[in-house]
Length: 554
Image (cartoon, rainbow, N blue to C red; front, side):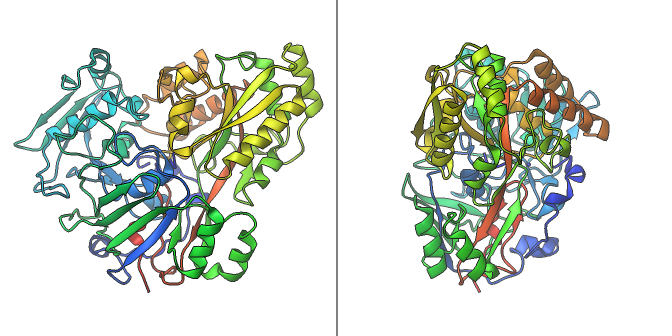
């Protein structure tokens, strides 16, 4: 989820992210909500229910696009495009944290006078409760905070009200001190994820999607009907310098499963924005007739096929190599209607360590823009003794996943396997394939970064991130060299060119060892109604994508 992202490594982002910024003023303008008309209501759509509207559990791009405006973490990002939007700034904290020389201790303090959207005063101790909920609920964001001293022991004890010694707070002064067991070069980025979005200290340890908790942000949730709609309204209590208050008074988000219907409703004005891209058959019309309110932006994302190394036949390297040789990447890209560029690299453009050659002629499995080597794939399947092996290919209802899943299954059959697709509702797909009991053999997945740092991508293939439920490493990749390399590089507090190059070496090793099968990097669209001020009030953020707080009516 939508990347997920630096904050500290913003200057190293590639020019692909340096997009023209719309509706961005100076700091005073940002605090007031920026340029554009104030007020009014809009209706927008998403094709699937977000995986959660609880900040401790939400991990999908369509969830974070909304939650970013409701739950402000200790640190956050500028509401701007390109490199500027990747800059880490204080959120509910007064300033960026002071970090000790050994990189283990982070000190910060809450701003004075903060109140949640329901009027409850915010306290420093709320931060520990926020992190406890992430750990206690087995959140997909747990791995970002397990490096805090005592966090692992807290999880193992299974007592929600237990103590985490590495978090010390003072409600009188607002001070928060966090001590890590080892240095973590991405910990400041973790403090800017939605998992760290502050919630009141009495927030229960349960999934609150149906009744999201109060937050500190320019908007608040006022209604949530899962699989139908949720509603955001401006929070009159919000006032944090540097973070815009938003322009639209009320944003109703409808779950519209048909992208074709959503696109037609945007055209007619019944919807004002659609999270999803228009479907392939409508894309030419949208581009030709509505280019004044439609655009596409590159993202630092990766689409890949996971192969569970703990389940046959993908426990054999020859079979994983066969998949990399045999998948038709141009055919998969065509299912995105021009919104995916075929590739081979796990790290995408825009993230330090990316090597463009891997996405072109230097891919060990052949040029991603050319037809696959099916003959080689069939031979490897035969060599592995896997001909005719039963394979279930997992995919979600999120477009174009159903088509991708079927296409991937067809490709596996051409390689000599006996593959059949299984489609799971997108709202629970991550939890399903991330549960060890499911024993998912292979399937389609992607990664949109939580922050644009190579460590955020490589956590998806880190042996240390494997867990029985909500497993982010769905392929159970556990290469000792890659795992130890990730651990070593994660302690680097500065992402220098040398450090980025070392991340790049791990990326190449991951690709060459066929632990996954990356096949491309995506674009994201912005399509709004005629009522919307597209020129002045649409801001595309490198982490959270379309920024609802920038939206305004003409």
